[in-house]
Image 1 (cartoon, rainbow, N blue to C red):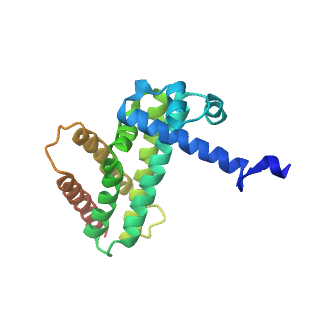
Image 2: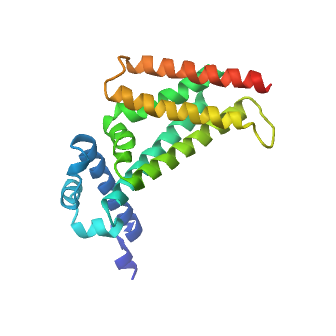
Image 3: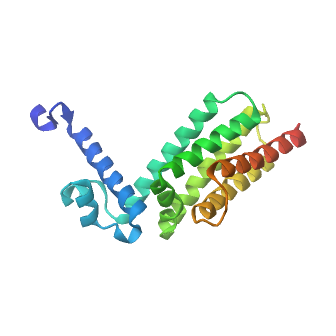
Length: 211
């Protein structure tokens, strides 16, 4: 039984995880370079170099593939932002700039990720719902980081905190989408700087009001 479960020192679960990763990598390449319409079972498996039975081992629909891919990108984004916040100096602008730069670079240094996260994520009602929930998660992250940074100890934080976090995250998503479509004549660094200005302005203003 052990021989059946492991091969070359890799367990069956590890091999399955590797195949899932290969399929998601293939989906990123196809959607990010050729478009959503090119994402088929046959094309995905050919790109991944896997038999189609391994597709059905991991996914039951194209939406499931896209959900898995957008979830992976969201996780990478959260890790990059939190790492940047941890390493940044204890200053509101430094923190905001580090987090925003980390997020924007992760999504745009590999343009395929931005295309999947911001465009393919709106392809179906199910994916739109998933994207909306992901935005809520990042909104809560921004609110929590602001509460921690400004030392807000109220057990029921002012709703204005969550309003501004929602406004900032939602606005950034729309702004980044517009920029990626070429409708904002800004360099990437200018985009990061302007976004940082807005985050700091609204954060500092609210901290003064609540203080």
